[in-house]
Image (cartoon, rainbow, N blue to C red; front, top):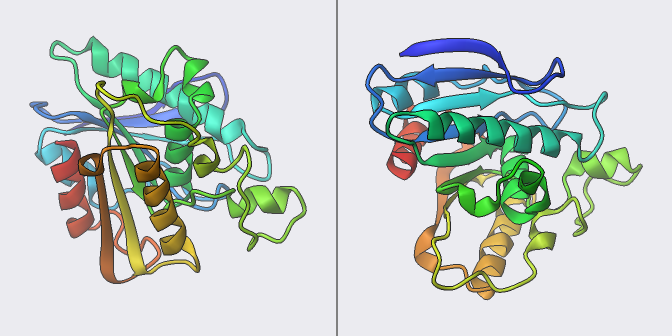
Length: 244
């Protein structure tokens, strides 16, 4: 594995990413966003992911983004779209272009959901949600994120659907007859309150608007709390199966 740390993808101090490259790339590229409630966490929070993914030929890019208290919605979403543009260009620059997968855990999954559901963010950088081959949503919040609610001075337990909610942007039939990204939704059986139910609603809404059922994987990690499994061996094996 070849590791390149703190590579810039923008001009801000938070616009940094780490690149983990297999010695013999044979798979695709996963752009990963860490969790931490949009107020904590770091691109180095990966556990076994670099070793297990690169061992299977998968290139891993882990990106930081602006967070609270300095950031405000949608600063962090735009950062992730900018990182996706960097990852896309890198993937396409390889001798054998790599398929791009975008994902994250908890807050990082929320950010990946926003890129998938609201095409305005990727469009700023010349991409669209279908530029990616797949999306990994690990315990993300498809409604308005609790820290966005807190930013507005609201109770963070509220369930709201507005421009800051990924599911809010699923508003029309998905195009038939064209390739659509594959999706993998992971959660814990003892996840955060209402997180499992909200992700079931996300899947149901996707199917309601014609997303192919065979393009969506929905898996519940047993005997686990919120993201307790993230980066562990079982998690990494599922990611390898999905991305590789």
